[in-house]
Image (cartoon, rainbow, N blue to C red):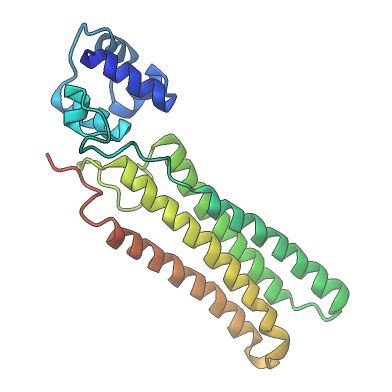
Length: 223
């Protein structure tokens, strides 16, 4: 099997179009067509990018070694949707709070309702931002992304997916802790609500730091 045939096979396995491969490698669709028809050979930079996209070693891509003979099998796409489930559950919790205060508890605690919805808006914003980056493979808007470095996008996607889960779970949990407010003194209720938002932010930052530690040494592809 030629190099072009292997590129076409891996592209088909992932369900990517030639336009998508061109976008991920920073080339044109015509260039990808030439690679697959063996009319031209990708430069080393593009070969590295292709091996990263296909999640196979450079040797496996160029020599045709099969995954399993010392090469890891292609990893499944990162699961980012678990964070979305937490965001959805959180939404229903916020709706419940509104009914709970306006119907059961006639003395609606406005600050608490604002707190729970603020947490939900923060959670869904972070989730949507990272989930879209994973889906489209565009990480240029992520804080700290360095255009001069070459990232392992598969690993970067896993890191963001991990943060998505932590983000959704933290926002949902902090919002649920609001159930304790009826047992608190009126003088500390506002402070407690603000503290929950601060706790969410701390958890989110911790998740990012943990993700960077978990994938330390795997994010950057050395030249």
